[in-house]
Length: 443
Image 1 (cartoon, rainbow, N blue to C red):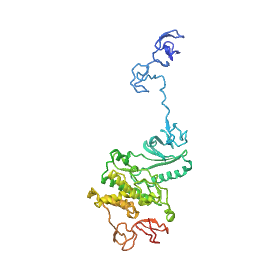
Image 2 (image 1 turned 90 degrees about the vertical axis):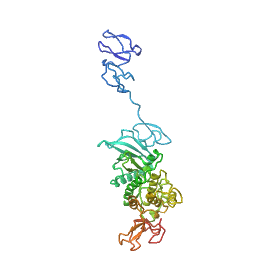
Image 3 (image 1 turned 180 degrees about the horizontal axis):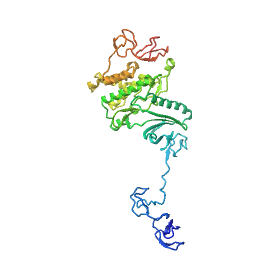
Image 4 (image 1 turned 180 degrees about the vertical axis):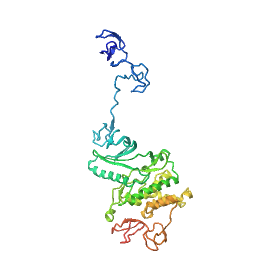
């Protein structure tokens, strides 16, 4: 224990057991009493503090130490325990020192520690969500002071790194393409740094719709509100489907829709599963990687052959979930709605909402040709609160049954191009069940 002589100010080394006892200074021979609590006596004056810097308790005027925690102002506050980061590998969980990018035990990539700075502009403040392929952080754009979201790609398999990186780049590109859509977060940057990749985007102050439902014991939203959200989502997927080549989302569901905290609207998130449809012709009909969420994905997507009408099926399942509080079960949900509309099961739907359930039933059809042919058609019926039964030919003004591929009067094309024929590779219009060139069956 160190203490200063009040006479000559010489710092003395004293034993802890002498605390509170009288001693004689060996230099000036002055006798004085040692303090009962240790203090470095470079300055024996009472500290001029309003509160304890360690525990924040109110400081007593004239006190040499905090009465609550014993902190001495002439000593440095104890260092906080070193921050550790747990490995996200389910078979590991090792606690790693802060600053490491890979687990010291198993080598698995680790989430970034709070305070990590990207491009000397984007600061990571804390982890918000963690999945098998990435982490999402809350951060700050130091150039503007705004709160942002940062998504990091995590890949433990070096052989898969470049493939995963291409998917991550594509997600950033899709956000860039959808930049004008009001319900899609703005892309602020794409960063490749230190064998890692990050997507920086707007932070959304809200909660995903699945969590909202679960927090209210699955209380459904009103059909009117759900229809408005569906209309906004149609604008996003229509932009994706019109892209060259067309992009399909493949994972529309309540988990990927955020309800703003002020309930002013929704935001659409997570485009990591989206991909282009690839080449036309027989090669384009080969099964691709099977990515889907059970209950929301149509049969063609389950077997790895998604198309743009697959997204309409998923949207219908999502709207059903939001309007009922119960998750969909694929095409069987469409059949259940049909039985209820036909009066085979009770209770009947409210007549003012019948149009909504008719629309959901149509788009949960097993055959893509029985669904709407585009997100534009879906959006129109959502906006008008009705199910259209006729379409007018723009060439001759003749009325045709809705989703007819060609005008019955002048043979003008009425729908968008659909899938290529699996036999001859030539495309037909959506709604055609057989190829107009070779007669092959189109699915």
